[in-house]
Image 1: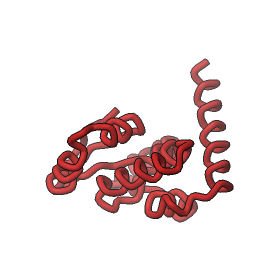
Image 2: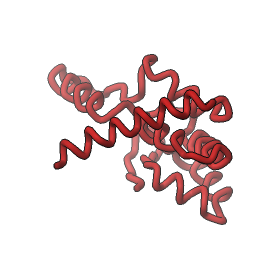
Image 3: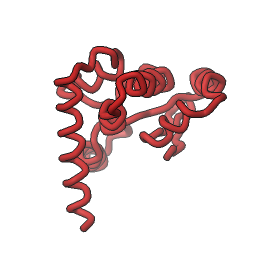
Image 4: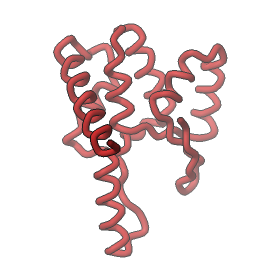
Length: 144
């Protein structure tokens, strides 16, 4: 899934995991990535990075994360939805014009995984799989 939104001065899109997977599989991905990097930017979220990092095959995982990094204009991933909601509410209440939507330093592991996916060892892989599963269970329980 990809959503379009435009921050000041540059068009930007949000790509979730399925959009990054589609991009990696597309035979024209190099041209698409070049176009994205030249004319717009892509936001990805901390959860998208976690989902990509939970890809079982290391070679595929590295490829997905490298593509995500290359299209994300060196922007830090977006914070988790609950953090974004809190920040938005605080900004609205204080009449702020903007919010910082990116992950904070507590998410540096996500940032490192995006920047250097080949450093994800077996222990880090297991950790991200467990965390992702917990998030999915919580989300599903909420909907149920």
